[in-house]
Image (cartoon, rainbow, N blue to C red):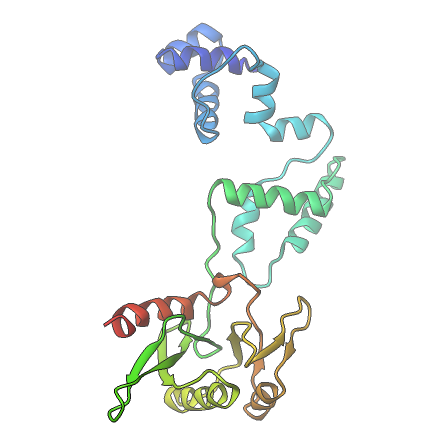
Length: 266
């Protein structure tokens, strides 16, 4: 068993890793790994309740899993595989379970597999790049900040709402201001965006606005009938972003921010 407590006690006292290796009888690689994992957990001191067993479970959870008969998971490999097209956690869990049974180990349940991957991704602040194809998707939204139009006769300032459409692959964008955000303007904006881009994308990704989505159900969102008819006419499909998930339409969110700073704020 690795004496993690002794290694860290000496390290926190300012002793070099070479000296710690000689003192504890552990290899320099082992000492280095214990120190590195302690840093990853922001562990900077020990107290009387910090036992060696507790440190082992904290720093080397995969060893605990192996000792209990569970097949350890290579999270770095899982994360890299998820970046490939059509690869899902369900598929990776199935492959993991098959591999575990082949070597006589117990696989983690799918739910535990997903929960542990979530912890791994949050811990290392990992993200996966979304690979786009040219012209496949058009993200659409209304800018959160409004413009104002001044009536030349009365001087009244009338709010104007900015519609934005963005092609994620090229970041090519279309913007147009309207006097309201009602359905006719929402639909007209899409048509003029198609004309501007000189083509129709395979998929539309709108926010969950009432002009486009009546009810944002998890499995099958209920779409506004006029919006659905527009999509049918242009032979495109509508995939609304998830509620409170701005990364589902990150490109148009970025364009909204740019236009808000460069046009609306001026």
